[in-house]
Image (cartoon, rainbow, N blue to C red; front, side, top):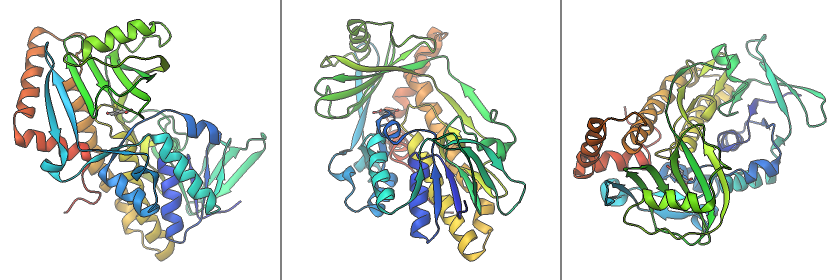
Length: 393
Ligand code: DHB
């Protein structure tokens, strides 16, 4: 088959790209190795930046972000033995907010919207690689849900296929590699059936390690605590999980309830060496991953897509290649700012296993530096709520 743009990956990046391309009159085919049910039920991130919400409202004025999602005007950072808390008030500092609206809900909305618009969207399609032998008509080589070979020829191929991207090899020459760093800890994440323990998110740097108190709905909550990257999610009992969480949020008594899902999230910081080669480009986790502290991952993916959609419109409808030639550099400006912010939040809030007493006290000094200063809180609020999509030059 032939299409204008072949998109690998039906996550937030791939689906929003198909929508923005359709708005510009460009057809696309989106393929994903997973089933629709799997895509709609995988628990992922929870926080949308102001930019992301503005875009979702443009795409669908009736978006459920405004009915099912919750606007959050601040977060709390907590530290020390007694849980000294500092709230960052987003609207008063930067005039912006964030929304708690889980990624799988965003995906349900986008899938429904694209399918209603008769988007060619194929589930259960395993991509094996990109044939870029013809420089202006790259093709995706894949196997469909029935095990039959498929070849999708296009004017452009986009890898929106996540951190284990297959398309990446066609851009960087290798499926692995890139600029990266690892962290000596991971997150133990739970979903529990309990009422919220806090109206807003609490990021806590306790003497025993990091914890994050987030929410999902009136009856289900999402929480995380720092753990060893080799931890077995099945090992601790519910009671042990609650003991760990309670100890890490001094100053708050958490509402406990049955733990209905548990997982260990290992994380890294990665940026691919290249984001585009010829008529193949990467967006989202295929191009970069960030550690989760700071909630940048999905938002950064969507910011890439906004730039790429515009560049593809110029290239494929006007024959103007200027925006595609600068796509990588423009996307990287934001990517490295988000990499820095995610690394910084992670290093400031976690207790490294080898931290000395000096390191620990310096970290508390850093938290005070930021939280007791309006300039410090403003930087944090600006980064957390998200830089505007096209920074003024
Ligand atoms: C959630 C995840 C994050 O990484 C974060 O920084 C905030 C919230 C969440 O899943 O709710």
